[in-house]
Length: 460
Image 1: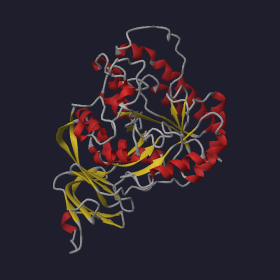
Image 2: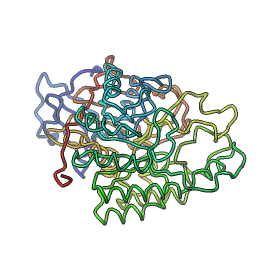
Image 3: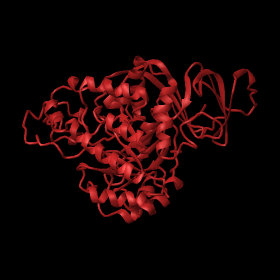
Image 4: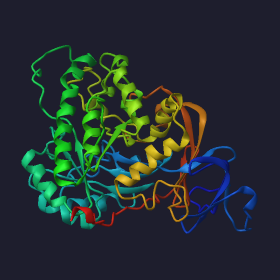
């Protein structure tokens, strides 16, 4: 079947239908899933384009709701063309673009329109967009909601780029009042400058020096602020990239008190640990930092217990020079990890060894992420009337991450040379074959996903 062609049906001996894996045919009409039928019940039309994938697993495409594309303004770091090709190669059919590190950031209605113009004609998968909350932009929030942003992100600490300043308590209360009754969501980079040991010195090439500079207490105290705001205003709140297991008790207590609060972690916090990071290996730097192996296992336990709702990439690339590989200085290097293409495989390689099953993959990487950004009525599920976004992959197949097979713009990643389990064979976007075995369709077929405003009656 040619890349870019319309697929009428996908047949496999392993279709993930609800919580069961069974032989089935996914029938597609007008870009939507029409029905899922048993192979013996499927009558093949002469003109029907059937993709038979043998015993490869067929399941909903991944929805990665935390991706820094950086276009416009820092397209040398990453752009829509390269980011969405990498997504397609990893079985990701929808990404949600963060409001930074592009220039301008997505913090006004005009800037959002500029972002949409820049993304037009460059996307190989579907793309939704987060807006940003920064000091003084409160009157832009509701117009951006009406224009279709999925929600908003803010920082409680310096964001790393000056054009996206962090907010103080007053800014947060102002923003929460604007968001009340809109049904929108506010995402928090939950770290605060509360630690008093910042004057400590150490070898900047040792990862332990950087790790000591961003201790767990910075996350815990930030999350304390988030939980209080969430309970006070009853606006949906979401904690991005949780790295520390220590604030989990605070999160659970807030939820039990009725806070509409969700939390994500990332592939790097689940796959990597501080003890294994070599001196000078600045490709491992991210904020919050990768913590120790005991903490990593606590995150896995919380994920299994349902305390953590979803897993995302937080794909945050930059040019190689900004990683300071020549000096190996963790304190000066840009903090961000590139992993958009490999999220499914990274997750499965570790999760399958800890008793997670295929339905867990869909729940954590597709359903919950789609739900966060109000796309759950059309994305993240293999069911009639949903978009025919499918990933075809082999969970048992191993492969090695090599530079020539990386499709995001800058190839530097801590996963280079790593052997992973679970290789993506093909990706189908709204019934069109956009990726197969290392090749892409010639034209980008992705669409902008503008989120219709959903007023939450409980908040009025």
